[in-house]
Image (cartoon, rainbow, N blue to C red; front, side):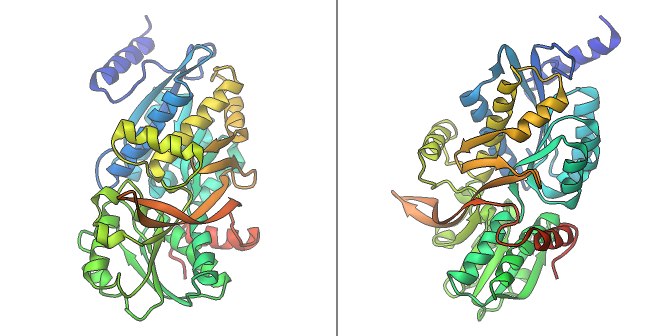
Length: 417
């Protein structure tokens, strides 16, 4: 056995022993290998660990439903904990691609991680499926290198729908926006502002919260009680803290709250106060209360296995598995031609729990339904229930593509003005 093969065998054995991966030695573009090697970056510890575990659970359930092997080619997955740290995500990406020789890269979860990893993975030729489409670098590299897609969502896509709904259907004129002070928060809040302003609304104030904030009191106290509503981009542990404080500061009874998916997503909902979130609105590409048969099957199966309802991240992982297996079936399970596999992943069209999903050839991010959801009690349980559907929404929503690109390029790299 060569030194290189011996090192790979030792590494694979160690991974199996630790339970970090489900993989031995991957396909690695080795032409004729019987396995497909997938590297999957997730934050499995830290503030976003619940999100990461939900996405992992969804992917595992997807492989169970759609197949862990295709035409005899076993799908092996190595999960890597990035701790939601961009530098760690980049180091791990280098190891997965250059040392483990993976066939498919399932991109990291946080937008700042994706921003750090994208310039590297784009040049490697390995098929990439990112969770979210949040940066102009993704837009450039997807088109330049031809190996990347986002199957989850455009970061601003639901927010664009939320801005339109807030202005046209709730008739709110003035809103205070609160967001996390990094690229994801800028892009989401910027998308909401673009949709809201397009329909005559005004953002009176932006409040930016550092990702590492532990006490949100100073930010909560800046919200005036005479505004029409508050729009909040908060996720992970910050979403739990925000909703609890929003109630304790007396805002919930006076000022309607609309937020991005993650504000009441099932990655956080079990930890949130029922009185604090009941009735709260979110704009979302997935909510657990979607009434289609596909989602009812998914939610029932997910709850039976994991003892909770799925959230957006769960659905995102499930869809990633569905797209990967569908693409591999068109390749008869052979992942050795990475360029062909990337092309096949781009061409997949599916019926997902969230609804129909296909990849836009303009942005390589999803064309899909978006929803306005509300937290309601259903059979004694709090669920995120759709109250408005925006069917087959383009990545740029109701904006022109030119107007969207102006917002997208600006707000993905800095605070919206």
